[in-house]
Image (cartoon, rainbow, N blue to C red; front, side, top):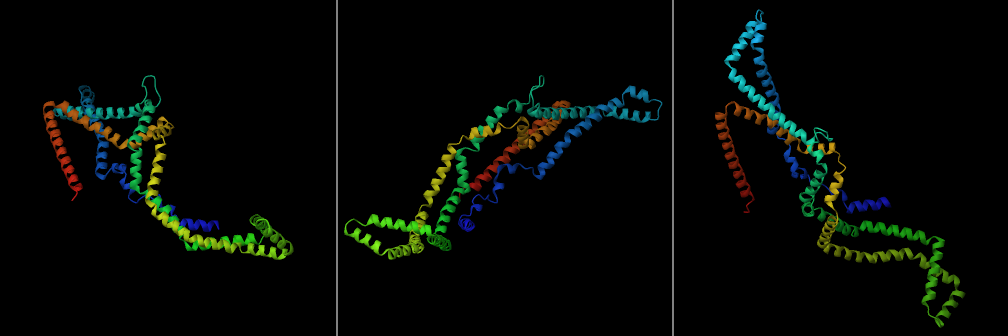
Length: 392
């Protein structure tokens, strides 16, 4: 019986579909937009190569003058390798300005990469406070960061207004309301279920009616009730006389009443079916008020919850390593961009050191054109978006 009732409830209350996530829900999440595309991945690979390229150029331009220096030439004199080194020396003398320029640019690139690398690592390291090196920014400001994150998440992500808006957009309250009310109406109108329940009730009442102790209790209850209802005087005297001299007939009448209890119960249930359909019609009329009540109940519960405190308490369990991992996983792509862009900026600075007038003019012209191009593209996209959103 328990399994049968469970099947009927599952039939009319499809809870499995209540919390179903729409198939395009993931695509609506903002952070999916930050996955690296193919072009960005190529840019990242190129940036990752840049510090190694600067390192190779630095090694060549730094070691080459040492290789062709006068002491090395003197040591190689008289050996078969001397002509080769002498040719290298002539090549270096002829191209010395280029070597110095490449050396300046490569050193600047390595410095740019190194400073950004150290700055990013200083966010997280050292984890524990050291006597000389101190402590990383995030570990040192752990409690403040946790509270600020919790406060920011509550204000901008998990505040009651945004939660209400998201609940309304998701339609979960309407689905829950429809599930409960439509399921109840469908359950009340299920003819098969009503017949099943009447059968179960009839069998249970028949089983009790056939038990001697139950029949005895009912007999005594009916007898006591009749004694209470029949007033004193002639009626009571006649009733007592009938019971005394027609005991078998009286007991048989009581037994017949007991035997009819299952049928009478079913008849009462059948008369109630009409009332149940009225209840179903009443429930159908109350759909909208019920939906508003469910939303009000949810918002009352949310207003009673200290979301900031809850988030802060949960994040208090984060140790420095876990907090570092959480921040790094959320920003690693951007931090790596910053780290490797240091090489490019260092290289640009190296060119400026090598030839300030010429490179300064080129940089001013180039960055000016890039700025104007950026403003132009931004305005074009803004106008296109406005025209698309404009009502027709």
